[in-house]
Image 1 (cartoon, rainbow, N blue to C red):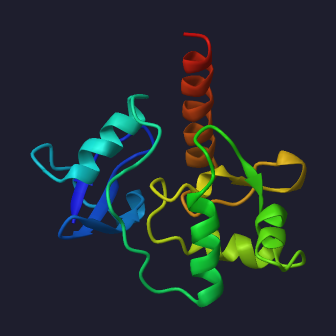
Image 2 (cartoon, rainbow, N blue to C red):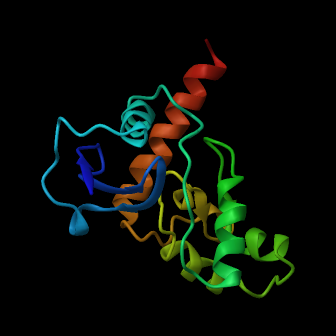
Amino acid sequence: MFVIETPIGPLGVVADGPAVVSVRFAAFATRPDPDADHPALDQLRDYFAGGLTDFTVPFELRGGSEFERAVWGEIAKIPYGETITYGAIATALGDPGAARAVGTACNHNPVPVIVPCHRVVGAGNKMVGFGGGLDRKRILLELEAAVAFQRAWS
C-alpha cells in the first residue's frame, strides 16, 4: 500500500500493477511515504492541488454485488464539481425506492475520491453519509466547487 498525505488526511492507495484497487482513509492508512511512486499518487496530489478534474489512472472495482457495481458505475459518471442525489441514482438504475441501498453501495465504494462517491448527496442537497466522514466530504466538495468556480471565471 502506498500512503500519501492529503487535505483530508492520509490516504492509503492499493494498486495491482497500473490499476488502483483500493483507496482507504486515515483509519486504515499507515505512515505517508514521500518517496512513493505510482501514477495514482501523482493524480491524487494534482487533484488535491486543484489541477486535476478527471482521473485517468486505471482502476478496478473488485467485489461488491451487481447492484453495488452498477451504483459505482453511475457515480463514476458524475462530473467534477457537481452533485447528484442518492434517489436520482436509484431512479437511474430503475429502482426509485432504492436510495438507502445506493447509500450503502456508496459506503462500500472501494476507490473513493477516484470514483467520487463524495458527490452523492441526500434529498434537497443535504450533506449526508460518507464512508470517510462528513468533514472529509465537505472538504472534497468545497475543493471542487472552488476549482470549478475559478475555472469558469478564468
